[in-house]
Image 1 (cartoon, helix red, strand yellow):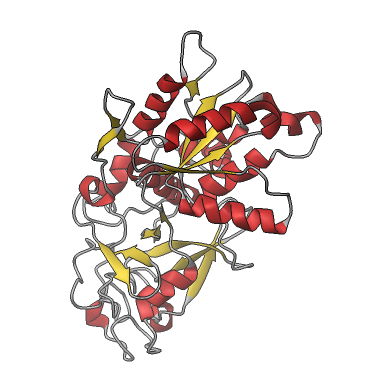
Image 2 (cartoon, one colour):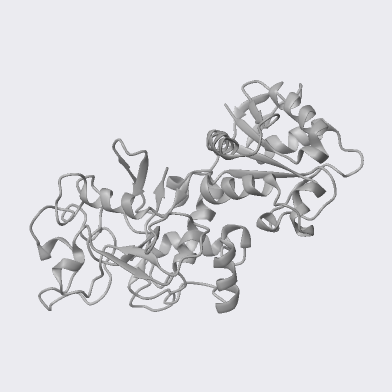
Length: 379
């Protein structure tokens, strides 16, 4: 049952919103939520975030009032809703140009449905919204017939890719680190040229450093199909997550530090993913000075060093980016952080403490180096 959150500036578009709400709710199995009477304040913020979390899609009506902050006035509530939906809740945003204005900065690369074009009717807009949302509509009253078949992360990610559900925690984590073959899908989707899949700071860094691919993308030591992708900054890793979320409508992001550690350790206090005792045969390491000398394919140690939930390669192979700010331990993807958390250790370490489930490292979010990769989580 598709559920729409409609974001709008009351001053400009209230009448259109009421018409849009009525038309959408007339469709079988479609529900909507519109802020008609909430007053600004902490309770407003909590309820708005709750309703955005509940929705499948956010419709944003463009009108001059949403940009009033450009003239020195208070920031528009619409921009606050867009920011939460895009960066925190990871919802599909469907923009509709209700009245001519500039697109909000955070959505400048997004196309929009233009209601200002002459000859368009409300039914045309409803049909366009349904198409964006992947709802097939029939000729009689735009009644949805069957859900559109959308790609899923499992269907578009080259093997090996799988989700491990973490019991009782409300999230899943990728069984393996993201591989070169999987990251290639992001490159082929023009991921390095689409601003909409980057945080604002990440895009500025991409422009400044002229990133077009991971740092070691063409290096034969690191670019095997099933080797974990390396040389990716935190910003590039987040952009991959935002692309995959947008393409599949799944809530995909880097795991938080707490999510990563629990997936590696469980709740029994083990030191390493496999148990209490160090065992060099269970992971890619250089503790005895006779290591492999490079990253291994992500399935190489499957079944040997798995976590209690069956997650692979969580001790060694590559350091893995987490969403978390190293210093403040916050998980805001859009915040300015001097350093972000890395977990897991890497193949050339000879100190067993570096492979413990609770060992943490930090690095600059713009640094893509040969020791770092990432895996993804889904909420």
